[in-house]
Each structure stands twice: as structure tokens, then as C-alpha cells.
Image 1 (cartoon, one colour):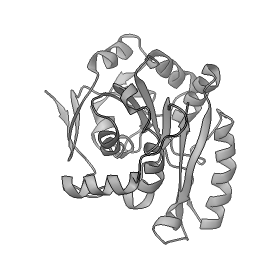
Image 2: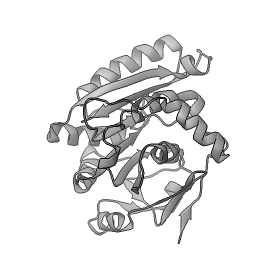
Image 3: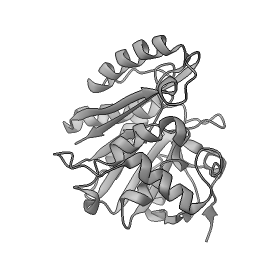
Length: 258
């Protein structure tokens, strides 16, 4: 069995399993009935000290529907290499300090057979945008398989087709993205609030300046609009709120879709 080992344990989150479990629990807080059954979440992917509270505010809303999910489709941007299109990997499992998560290898192979994705272990090996979500999922869901997809430069239709192919009962979609990067605190608030409105309207022309996961979001929002899903913002903060430095901040927002 080929296992993708953690790449950012000890930097983005605790390497010690007890400390990690405690920090995830702290980020999530008390589980809350969202009043709706989630179909998807949009969450940030920075170190937990920066964005863990924003992510946790969305994860806690899985309280009334966690039992509905037996697999998670996790999509996030590629930070470590130039990638054209979408990529799965040949790993059988992804590991965190909390244990291993089995990959739905049959679903990944089906995407490959249909020509919707490529296979690239290199794109996944050091990518944090997917990895930082895994301990949250392990805390919120009991037993599930994972379809991890790294997204590079692509058109919205490419992401749309992948999501459409995977949209079956029992699937939670998880979109990993941060918002604006390295503006002042005041500028970031203005930019991010403007783009949050665009996201709530399912705009499909977001750029990398708006959100690092813009390629994922544009295709995902095209699907959401077609499927008549609804969206609600859960929480917004930036690193100036969570880490103190307000000169160059990164924005974080989380959303629930239902």
C-alpha cells in the first residue's frame, strides 16, 4: 500500500497526535445544527493558528449531517509546482498524525479513464491545501474515503465536469482556498468583503488575486448555480485578526453550501 505521508505536520499544525486532536477540537468548538444539511464546505488552508478558527466554524456545522457522508471530494489549489488541469495521485491512503484515510481509488481511476484528470504524485507530495483539512475531517466524520484532487491552471468547465461526475449520494465536497494575500489589514477587509459578495452570487470569474483557489471556485460555482444549491457565509477573518501583524495579511473565509 502506498501512503502519502504528512508534509506540513509540525509546521501548519501539531505533529503530536494528542496536541493535534486538542487543537482541532478547540478550532471547531461546540458542534452546531446548521438548520440545513450541508452538501459542501469552503474553508481556508493556512496554519491552524491563522485560519483554524475560520475553518472550524464551518466544520462544526456538519453536526446534523455527518452520518450522511461516506466519502469526501477534496479540491484545493496547487502551490508547489506548475500544473495544468486537475490531478489525482496513485496513493492508497493519506496519513496524518491522527491516522490514515483510505483513498477511493476506483473513483480516481474512473476520472482518469474519462480523461477528466491526470495522475501526479508530485503535485500532491508537498501540497498543504489538502493536507490541513484532513485532521478536521477525521474529527468530524466517522468512516469515509477520500478523493483528493489538486487543481492547477484550468477552465471552469474542467472543474465542473469533475464535480458533476462525483456528485452522488453520500459525498461531501470540500473546497480549500484562502482569500486575498499580503495587503494591509484595511485593504484586505475591503477586497475580501467585495469578493465574498461575488462568491455568494456564484460568480465564475474570480482571479488568483481574489482567492488562491479561484480555479477551483469558478468551476465549483458553475456547478452550484446549475444544481440550484444555496450558499451561506459562515465566518471571515484575516491573519491580522488572528496573528497580530496588520501590515501584510491573508484573508480567510468559510462557507456552507446546501
